[in-house]
Image 1 (cartoon, rainbow, N blue to C red):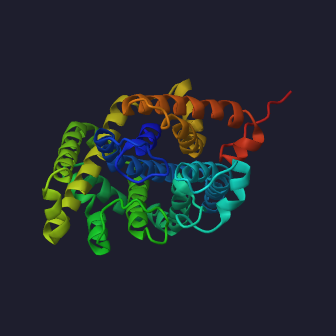
Image 2: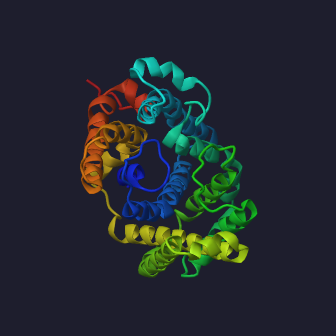
Length: 364
């Protein structure tokens, strides 16, 4: 969903590095729907991955592995993947003219938006690394006998339909204290601690629930209920967003809290539904899934740069929004997959830089 989401950012009503002249409410609604659950899903699965990694790694090995597979790609991506995005942004806005080679030194001239230095979509890698390190003492406790009891209680709670109300409670507290909705879209860490804290809870939920059969049975059993509840909450928020009722939400604290509850329940309804349907229909593996699993991180690092490069030229055409959108989606997905297959996957150096495991040498 990363490609349709970030392509949609070019055409939706929200701010982005690249913009089409004509914007689309339909693509804004599409992105609002994806945005409700896709990053929580990322962090939940990342928490599950961290927990399972500790089944066969010591904590020191786990920390070193997280550093090599997250921070190395982060810094490499910061130097190689992010500058082209800022270059084409500045070109479109008329804030720079000249070649990319001439622009590249300017990328390091101060933080974005006044300057150009920005980690763009790579914020996820930085946040995940920090969460992985902060979580180490918590994970030590959760893997103890007392921690097992805590995990069992949470799994029991999360296996019921009331989970869509109970699980978001920490997020609602953070939102009310912070006075901002989730997410606020500012992935700059220092001014984004409400998002960081909320995603950290999702990460911990992934750690605590991933190995619980009770949780997975509950998610699978209630998947339709969770999905309907999530979609209903989303539809309600969208109806409010595009009506005069949004002024009431913005001007009335009680209505604002109701809005946050709808968003939180919508997020967890959709997230639990996706996990439930995944348990039911995706509980298998094959060659393609193994290939895709290995490609996931490089694909994430590359995709937005490809979207912006292609999008820069496509938005200059006179085609309709729908035509431009579909061309950028198809071309960006194909371009990212091609870059992974030809430039990343086959070479030891690029595998290392993109956080992939090294291939074992075959014995003669």
